[in-house]
Image (tube, rainbow, N blue to C red; front, side, top):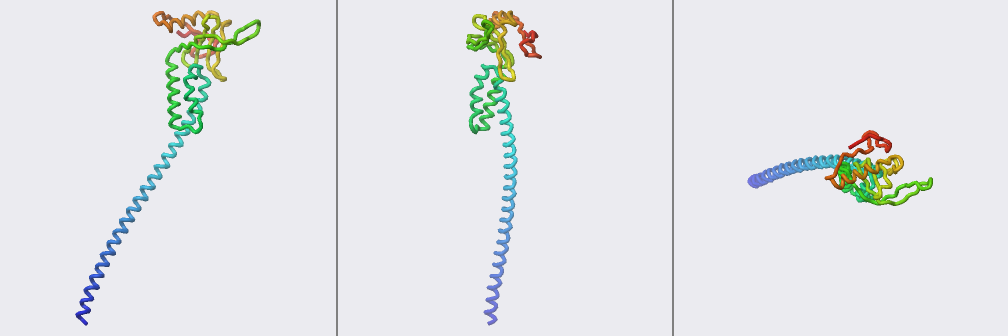
Length: 226
């Protein structure tokens, strides 16, 4: 009986040692799992925080794009007709339903690039426009072939092909406005014809003074710019 007991005691001790080893291994695995879970939770919280920042930035960018869109739409009515025509594709996209913010930004940037380029040069444009003409104490309108000269996007002049009609153009609260000047500035026709020759034939260019003030763009201003 003692021999059997000793034999069983050794078996029990071995089993007890094995159980202790397995318990220790399980504790280690549980500890590692807990650490991994904590790390995963920390990473998840970090990603959520980054997501919140990105969403806030996206909202801010979308607000800025919408504000820029509103400014572009308001500016469009103030532009010279020739520049409005080049902006039309951008205006069409900005007024579509649910436009992409990134595409909106591209169209806004392209429109502003065109405006900047237009402001850097004198633009000569030939077109047909409707002008007011006096007739028997009445004012009538007729379509005539004209050449328009744009000094940037804030000032322009026009003169008809037969030099009978001329005037000036500039932005106003109601949009771009053309004003005939045959009666108020009869000498302007000669000046505009000389300006057109200087633009079309640079070899014949000359100094030309125009009734334009950098301070007051009203058509009555008589400041000379060359």
